Image (cartoon, rainbow, N blue to C red; front, top):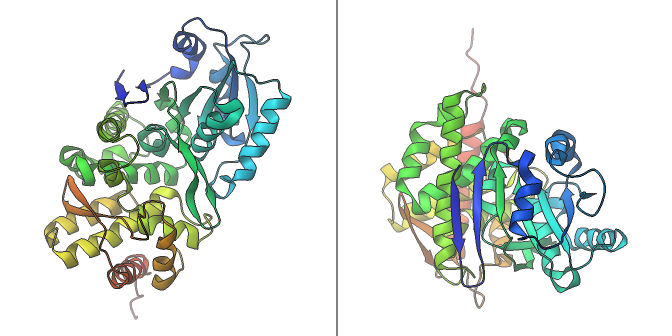
Length: 382
């Protein structure tokens, strides 16, 4: 049972990755609260609750203050808005949630981000626990304390740093993921390898067939658990050194500048987050090649590994629109865009002098590559 410690100036907690966590949840929460009273309030999506309510509720009493109160909210980036926070806060108040409330974020990244932000502001702060059910949430969004919601102007522009009491990642929940969501989550693991961990990248590069096996086997389960744990260690190492994204932590945004622009351009409806980041990463490779911070051979390995965890959904947007949308990126400083550039496999740097022309060329190259790689093969003439 891998357990990885997050230790920042403002919080210390564990990320536990194991099978069967849900069935022992009540005792784990009681241990976290150290005998203090608490009332559990589950914030989850209808689909997740339909799949996993039975094992979730298995360890809880059916009645009384320790019985969970369930609040349902749709999953999906387009529902990650301030209106959702207000609605859920109102439901908490009507359900009698007070300072003894313990919020349980049971779902993917959207549920986790909303719940963490709600926990930061409800009654000026109540504790919460992350129970991520998607690969993307387990390897990335559930840890590190970044919470928030989207505005029409851009992604995650409203939020706070608010760490959970713990992250409890039950790998059993990954079995119910649609294949596209699993692959999208693995793109964040590929990103972790590119920016920080050459060994993780090589493992993903060599074991794609096993990791993506349609029929779960002991070998594929072991490989997936290894990837989750290694990805969490990357983020833990980075967050432990830079909690508030003042320096090193910005490398976690590799692929996100254009990736977030793609999501905004498509109204958060056409692509999963990991898919958008994958296309953004391919765009970043074009900048790196133009600046000669990576070799063509390295760019080719990275591109092939990204595509190995596809297919990626396509989208329609102009390069000019994508570049315009990058001005709303929350990483920007004093009007200058912060851009994460690969300098090898397992290494990156943050630059502040990227120009519109460079980004436009990268976006155009990425769009051309997308059209070329997804084009239907020409039919042979009889």
